[in-house]
Amino acid sequence: MLLKPLFSIAIFLLAFTSNAFAQLSPEQQIAKARGITLYNQYKTAAPELRIAAEAGDAEAQFYLAEELRKEKQLMTAEAQKWYEASAAQGDYYSMFQLATAGGDLCAVANKCPSGIKSAGDWLELLIKTAEPRAMKGDAEAMAIMYNAKSDLTWLEKSAEAGYAPAQWLLANRYSEGEGSFLLPWNRKSAEEKWLKASSEGGYPKAMIEYISILYERGDMEGVRHWLEIAAKTGYQDAVSSYGAYLSHTPDKVGYPIDLIKGYALISLLKELDGGGNVQVYVEGKLPLISEKMTPEQIAKANNFAKEWKATHPPLSFYPEKLGL
Image 1: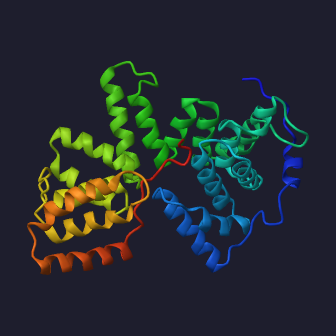
Image 2: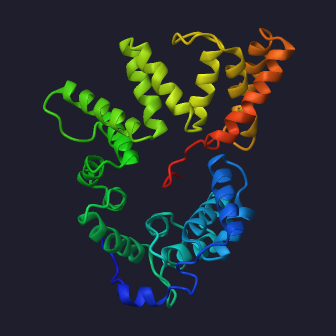
Image 3: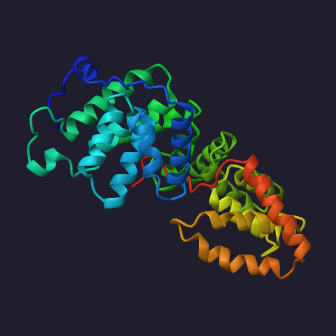
């Protein structure tokens, strides 16, 4: 890919706003956290994210830009503005979206207006920013280099360095046929190795895929262990399965029946009423559980749900940060 000459890093750094490394007030920090939670639940998050974004927080600026872009299914002028504000503070993810999302002013005009970076400029800047950090052992930067260059070697380096999302992604890339393996079973072994490593690193999407391997192997003790761990992260897929299996609707993995906990967990999913089509599942599952319960048990389940919500991470679909 041919790239246009890039403005120097020094010139780019001069473009930092006075809010480049803004310290958020407690209220702004709460708004940011709430906004990211809503974003991860496929709910409208822009009002909360905007509070922290306008205060200069790079991560909030990125998430706000993501919401605005996805809402219109294209790169709007406002989304680009927030990506650029975030990228000006060194945010990898904003640089990547500016380099790849399309629909920027340069693409529309077929040339860049004065002072506007092209997608190629942003890609080159991303590499110039991330590569030195990756060379110093920054595992997340290594994963960004994989996204920037589509070079599996960088993803493998990131996984070896212990970055759990990269370990999960590498397992999936191997499953899709990428990478070279002399023997087919070595590929399968590598997939399992990285899913297990990512699970141990706390990444719930990997846990769910690792659970599938354990289930096929008949390791129900391992399935029960990892499903509980995954549910405790707030991952929607895990919470829904954990609640169903605890309440024996159905009994597939051998948990002792716990109607109160199972009902509580499924009822928590009512909160996910933005996107993701979870409500159809909840409306079908809760009656199957409640028909086995007394009013007193349902009251206890409602209390348990409140306690769980107060002591565990928010429910989340865990969308990939560079997902579409």
